[in-house]
Amino acid sequence: MLARIATGEVDAVLCWHPDRLHRRPVELEAYIDACRDGKAITLSVKAGEMDLATDAGQMIARMLGAAARYESDTKATRIRRASEQATRAGKWTGGTRPFGWTITDGTPALHPEESAALASACARVLQGDSLGSIIRAMNDEGLTTTRGKPWGYAQLAQALERPRNAGLASYHGEIVGDSTFPAIVSENVWRGVCAVLNDPARRRSQSNKAVHLLAGIAQCHCGAYVRTAGVTARDGTRHKIYRCPVRGPGHVSKRVTFVDDVVNTAIIAVRVAQAATKKAPTGLDPKAEQLQVEATALRKRQEEAGVQAALGQIPMQMLGSINAVIEKELEAVTAAMVHLEEVAARQVPAEEEIRPVSMDSPEAAEWLSMHIDDRKDYLRRVCNVVLLPHGKSSTKVFDRDTVQVVVKAPGEGQGPLDERQIQRLRATKENFRGVGGGVFITFHEDGEELTYRLDDNANEPPRSGSELLQGLTFVARSGDAGRKA
Image 1 (cartoon, rainbow, N blue to C red):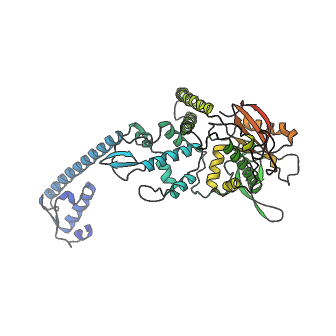
Image 2: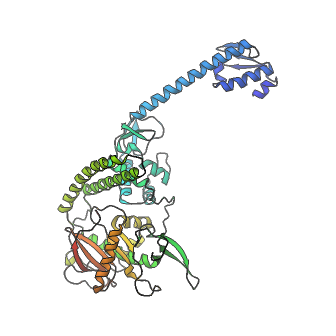
């Protein structure tokens, strides 16, 4: 249009007010140049005629333009301040309804189904479940985003990291006070979830199509999580292996199918034994489960504070104060957990409850038919898997004894075994040479560790007493010293 005005194709421009033609001074100057070159006049309903070919007309246009720009800037400032004030107060400022709440006349309230799903997702993240498995579960249940779309990684991560989940208001990423949105989870749980999701060591796959059971879960005896890789045998066949990412001699490299076979067998035995030891068929006490989530969240906050201090994001002298506050909260939560565990302590199954389980059993079929995401999540919650170096036999023959499973103690959070615990596991394997070696699994009873060997033949009839637990042979009892807190 400016080109047509400048060439004289336009005699006059009609408008309601000059500020409807332009709001920025730079745009006005371009318009003045075009009108001067084309000798066009401007007619407005509210300001009358302006001849921009004259100095007086240009002065009036510039004065009106400056006033219009001032009015626009002032209005934008008022809107920003009102929005900031509402945001700092934790009020609803409009837009798409956030998942987890309903909005009625500007007042938020908890959405029963959505808030429960969000709380469950937070608990699962702290338990070590992958975002992929949570996404799949929510989509399978028919829960969609508030835009009616299926859940994805970005959408779920954003929903889990919102401060309003804990009833907090934020402005430009900083917590500024309480929100008018009712809290879905406690602040401890929310901060714990954020620490997990922002952990640099966390695997950030953008696909929920996991392939290998133990990738990122099993540890090399050096402590590093193993990864998968492809190798070619001498006969030209390709195989997948679990391999330690640390370069150098002595680190593990084992065939995926062989290792998975041992772990699947061990976990089936563990699941059956744990099912038999449950005192109540309803499972965990909801209060105990919530306390465990709170404890995990507090530990995550401790880890996050340590990382921030190491990176210089907070003064090192503040770390002691932060840890003291968290430790005080953790002591109270731990004391409550211990009390509940003492009340509902797990017992070794009675003789009539013991039965051998084969790989053809319904229990085995249930485990093997589970989605791989669910199996990986179960492994993260329940146990640690360590791949030890090969023994003295030929490296061409897979040694099952080099795959060891450590069942977590009650209340123990997710995470790898440290170097001391791995060395202890290796010593345990050496100490049990007299019972034939094997894959050893530990259960906990009344503060003690009960170590069992995974039987090669789970179809063998059970022996008297409690020495055989679903294909597990009792080999030792020891104190609980040395376990991870």
